[in-house]
Length: 265
Image (tube, rainbow, N blue to C red; front, side, top):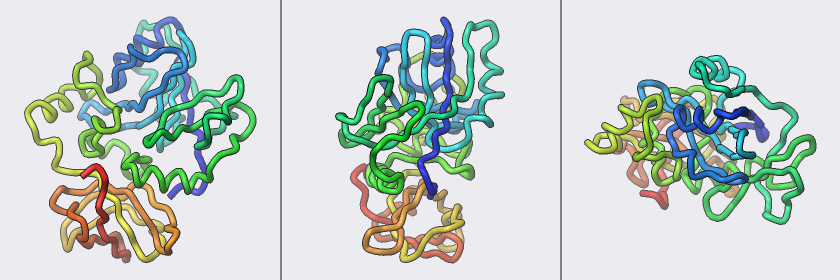
């Protein structure tokens, strides 16, 4: 669980910002109009998710990447390696805040990004956004199967394991991007659904929990967790399909977790 809403924000700017985003990220950027947003990701050459983010088209020459886990500073050097001759500047932005909030909360200069179930987050420079506590947003994201990626999950998970197609975070018809060959092979030939996202409950706080086990075998990775209103914790994880049946018992360190029914399975 993350203790507060982290604002790890990257800006792409310049005449070739759109071309760079289209060539590097796994979703189709071209349909986005100014003010539009989408879920998107930058993958490794092996097709694993380096960063998942909300991509917001700020204007014709500028895109904002609000990361869902991982630091912006750590990913800037490898991202800049792909600029080559393109006219695009990549930098981290500081002094911005976000929260899940009602549509009426938008102020001039704000940006918004769509969340599942007609929810939205508002991104604002300078002053905090009056919205839901971060833990409540995380809880809603768990119920929707929308992940935050902790450090131990970065570059470990395939898009299909997080059901990117269901989340609208990937295009299987756009041109090439890093990892596209692996992603396309799994999508069109099968084999990409060996792991799936699941909701979990636990009777205790999951502090320090990362890897899940099913008996003596590795079962998957814990993503985000929050305290549950009824006590204990609720969590989102990605696990082997054979460990994803509702009611199954999994372990994470000394914690016992139960798989819950999910709307997407």
